Every structure is written in structure tokens, then in C-alpha cells.
Image (cartoon, rainbow, N blue to C red; front, side, top):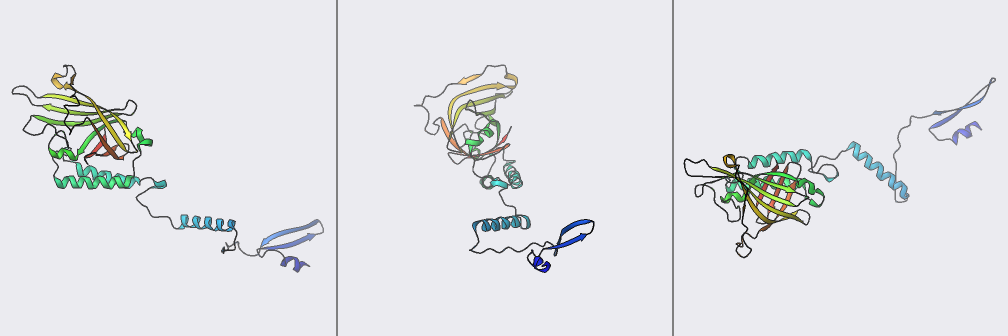
Length: 284
């Protein structure tokens, strides 16, 4: 009987009976073999639960033994931060020393454009419907491909820089308020004056309102231009320039424009304008 009972037990366990006059019969379970894992086999006749278990086991084995190699995207589809950081440095290096594009050659423009496309690809599509708050603040322009035309109007006609007019372009900023929808282009200028008078320093603010078109496109509508002298003449009042009537405004300057935000994070922004103008901003 004892042998028959043992043969009915699983191979991994043995039952040993022990009795003594002073104690009742006690049974102990002793492993007959070390608990080695068994190989699971599944075929088309297995139930859906067996298949689910097999798939789960396979996924766990891959995630532990064979981790996926690093790619351009981080976890959950987010950009790889190390890759993005290196591409940002590459872009900043490409546009440095170009005086915001005023001193850029055709080769410089191609290098800047290629560097911008790399970070745009690594960052993925921009969705301003969820990341509009990242636009908020004051941004400093560090590169514009349109400035290579040597005019302050960029791709559109504007006053030329250089010796024809005594105008020196200073820093250019964009001030964006996502609550009031204000979108101001702020330009620091230095106007030459006859000797011995010092040059006149001024800040021109081109005020716009903006709205979103789709996920990453921004439309701005011009409202007014104001000029405020700085430096020695800072006590002068703010001057508002008259707005040209729509009938007198040239076709090249309709008073509105559109651009796409192609990359955006906490400290850098890349846009491409309606005339394929590449602009690079850093937070100020």
C-alpha cells in the first residue's frame, strides 16, 4: 500500500510517515528533486489562457535578457533627451557668429537649415493645442535666414542695413502672451545722427494678435507700431506710428502672416515662415 501511495504522488514530492509511541503519526513532504523550471510547450490545441501565459512569459524574457537598443525616441515615444541636447548644440554652433543671419553666406544658410531639420525630426511633431503654454514668454531671435537679404524686412521689403541708411540692428525679441493673444516683435535699433550728435537708440514694437491654425501653425495680424527712445533720450514719450490704410498697403505687406512652429521646448523654438524663412529663438 505504501508503494502504491507513493506512486500516486507528484515526482517532486515524497511522503515519509513517522510514528513513535509518544506521539501521533506525522507526515513530512520532502522534495525528491531540486525545483528546476520546466520548459513549457504550447501548440494550437492549447487554450487561450495558455497562449496568453506563453506570450507574457516571452515578453518578460525579452525585456530582461534582451533589452532594446537605444533609439532616437525615448520611453513612451518621447524624444531621446541626450540626442536632442546634442542636436541643439549642433544647431547653436551652426548659427553662431552669423549676426542673426545678416552675415550668413549661402553655405551658412544650408548648414543651419540642415541642423534645424535634424532637431525637428528628433523632436517630432509639435502640438500647440496641448503645449501652448510653452510659447508663453519673451524669446530672443538668434537666427533668421531672411536676414541674409540684408534688409530689416527679411523676405519682405524693408529698410536696408549697411551704409545706405545709418541703421544698426540690435537685438530682436518676440513677446508672446497666450492669455491676451498678444504677439509683439520687438526690435532694438540704433539710428545714426550728424556729428557731433550721438546716435539715437530706440526700440520699435510691432504689435500683433495671434491665433492657432491647426496644431502647429500660428497666424498673426498686425495692429500697430510704437517707437520708444532709449539711452540719452529715454525721457521722450512713446511714439505711435500711423497705420497705413489697407488700400495703400503694398501686396508684399498684407499686415498678417503665418508660420509653423517646427520645434519647441523650454528653451529653444524653431519656426518656418510662409516664405520658407527659418527662424531660431532662445528663451530670454
